[in-house]
Image 1 (spheres, rainbow, N blue to C red):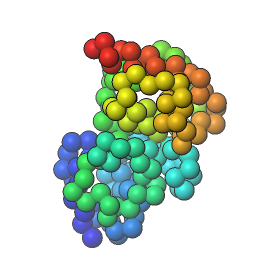
Image 2 (cartoon, rainbow, N blue to C red):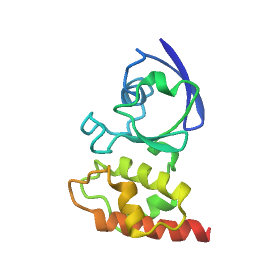
Image 3 (cartoon, helix red, strand yellow):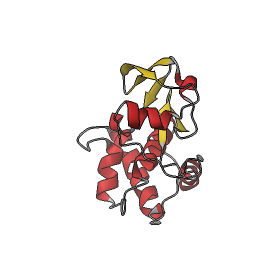
Length: 154
């Protein structure tokens, strides 16, 4: 089956079974490896992408559900680490092992697209589905707050 959708602003056609997880289409068919496989059960958030601006877990999003839709991956933020979230992530030394970071960044980007000045509790709620085995949650929160300030001032 061929499914047409947009990914990072480009029209694509994916040839896979309708129930194929979007994650595998992104990684295996489209060759975009920034989105990570974590648990496969939508529990860890490593595979987070945006579907029409909303954070979703691509490991549990069937290809058929993205037909005609807009998908954004970590590659859409910037190619040279200039997105305010990426700048803040580096400034606050957020990544340790780094495996969860693409999902963390995509969840944070979804939050900041709708809330330009999130409180700690709003950040915690928006990020609650993203697991960081290294425990960098305080640095993630600080980076999101820093990026929010920079985005408001831009």
